Amino acid sequence: MHSQPPGPTAAKELFSLRGKRALVTGSGQGIGLTLARGLGAAGAELVLNDLDPARLEQAVATLRGEGLVVTGRRFDVAKAEEVGPAFVELERTVGPLDILVNNAGIHRRAPLETMPAASWQAVLDVNLTSAFLVTRAVASGMIERGGGKIINICSLNSELSRPTIANYAAAKGGLKMLTRAMAVEWGRHNLQANGIAPGYIRTDMTGGLVVDPEFDRYIRARTPAGRWGEPRELVGAAVFLASRASDFVNGQILYVDGGLLASQ
Ligand SMILES: NC(=O)c1ccc[n+]([C@@H]2O[C@H](COP(=O)([O-])OP(=O)(O)OC[C@H]3O[C@@H](n4cnc5c(N)ncnc54)[C@H](O)[C@@H]3O)[C@@H](O)[C@H]2O)c1
Image (cartoon, rainbow, N blue to C red; front, top):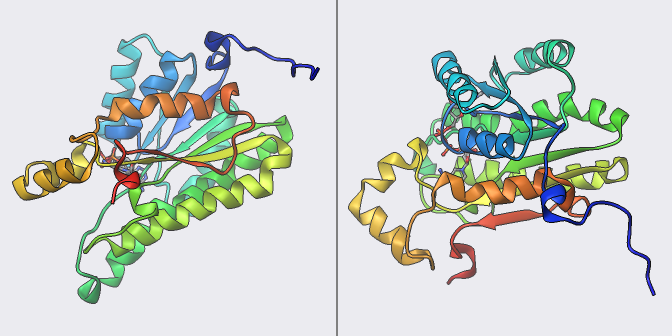
């Protein structure tokens, strides 16, 4: 008979984030805001981040109004000179982080043969380099404290591309491999780094596509679920990957895509 490892087994305890502090980048709206709300509902204290101060202030007020414990910090996740000082201040005034969600992301669509170098660079900076910069700022403390959870918001485009998004696909493909690199390098310190790869989700980022009848038809036909996803449908994956329930899950990308990636 194998003995059972010690630890909680009741679902309520396994998935509880009580006593944990989580930072979600780019959480002024969209997927980030919804993930923050979900982590908060599971018990985590929250730190929101966004580039846009008004959006951030509104998001903090909204979640506080829902009874969650929330602070906000405005900084650009793609700028090393902003990330470093922001974390020194954050750890000093708010406290150490147990959970980091690298969610901030942007699109700059253009045909590859005429894509401006600035669009290439901006998308690489915000969708990929930011995860390196922010995680680097958080990881040493997590290693010292004996553990932590890192969740990188990847994409279907970590695996698949389509015309005009070469910069985004390169960045999200890179983020998938950065996730694996984090898992390999920090697994022995009890850090788990995993990715959530959303399919087509209705947010501001996809707003222009949702209202394009041709694209909308294409997504509904291409997705086995026959519809777009909603941000709240990513919350279960985030709570799982932030909680003790995933302590032996490392370097995985969880596709939450209505079955799209499984379909030819
Ligand atoms: N919407 C989808 O269908 C979809 C699918 C797959 C992956 N994703 C990914 O999910 C994440 C969130 O997307 P969304 O749809 O909620 O987008 P969104 O545009 O609605 O929200 C992104 C937020 O990030 C903030 N942000 C942008 N650059 C920043 C920076 N440099 N520093 C700090 N904050 C910054 C923006 O101000 C905005 O509030 C992104 O990484 C995106 O690539 C989205």
